[in-house]
Length: 367
Image (cartoon, rainbow, N blue to C red; front, side, top):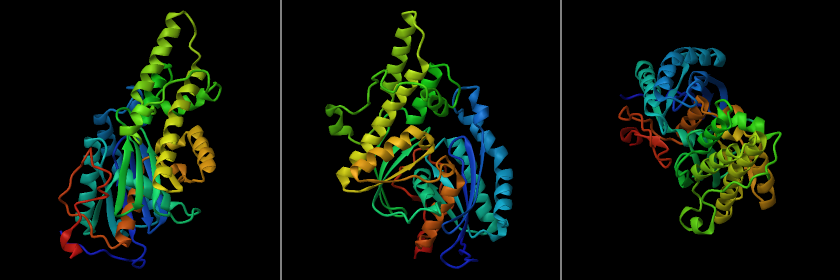
């Protein structure tokens, strides 16, 4: 498919529609260059709540049902029509394979039918791109360290350039931070999703009441896993503590357990992120992903970063969860950097490495 990028508003401001379906949120975003026009999200969280977590098949069906009305809502909010769009962008991965396939299929259909270029991009890098849509923030400086914390991913990245050079420094070895919140919430009898519930319970608790372990933080671990994360052991430690308390006939202090667990997670995340900043001589830290909505995480990161001389950037919280606007923003950056579109020879890649910012770029267009 040979298409030419239309620049209705000038070569520096492509109008891009982005599709994000990597997990349980159907995100449709429309941006003009670095200006956000629409961030429409349809969540299937309520459908997953009965199971205590995301069910891939349920998520895929929900995306199928939500895609068309979400696209229509985004176009209406942006006051543009489909034929006004200059390019289509979509998350190719990482994420749930079935959910990703829904978005990829829809994006290819739109690109072919509208004869518009298609940009298949990386979900994790999209979380970084969300920052450039903050109209009140100064331009993103490079290099920067990025800490991405969500239900399915906990990653520490060194970003030298958003469109060409993103290095994975470390990631979770087992449960992501968001998954750990969900599992501990279930142990404490709190509803899904666990993050907000743990946060609410922790507000009345003592973060120093119980010293839970900090995964991969011992000297013996740091040599091989300095920037990696592990929350499975923490989850197990909480489970054992609760079991022992109940076996002793005592009431579980839910607020104290929630606060102590949250503090352990926050401590590990912030400590490793600031270590990466120090080791690489980068005085900038960008936080992204849905778990950044946790106020304690934001507060501790800002406080400790300030003491270390590191500037913290946090995109608007509405752009931290999975959304199509960040996908559109990343594609817009690729377009403005002169990168060719993707071919149709790509699919859903549940394990797409973060170093692959754009998938299947066209060699013909590049020539």
